[in-house]
Image 1 (tube, rainbow, N blue to C red):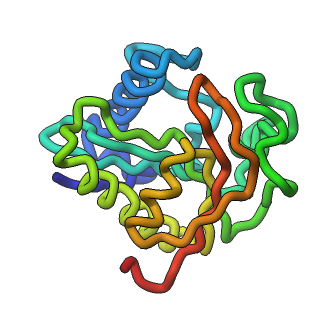
Image 2: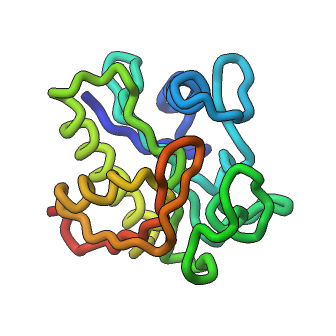
Image 3: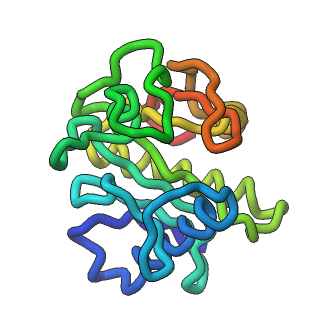
Length: 195
């Protein structure tokens, strides 16, 4: 099992891995969760998949087991910034504007995490290992990019297992029903060492 961080600058060194991530996202969000999202050629994508973002994949033999997208909260592309802030600004119909208790940050040291998934076919005995590898690479990538905090909108249960993995997280918004599951915005402070 490998964990890779992709950017527009290194796609060419990883073959079709980026396309595999977008296909796995389609399977997770469109097929499994039945979300109404943009898709083309069997891949899910949106307006936040820009050169400002990074994508992490846990993969094995060309199969993506888990993934996450990371975007700086300073990002801008046309009228869009990052998903949580744009939802708060009323630019997204699918996410309530009251998802945060305070104004969404615009700070080079805060990055957003989004499109987090563990593939449904990952066996139960491997899930914790896959989750741990995904979170470790997320933290490593965030630090490499100069982040000290990560902001994400996650299923409520994710905060518990992130804490079980040793990450300091806390709620920064109310619990909301989004796409048929209970979600809540969380902030994660990055420590000096991974564990």
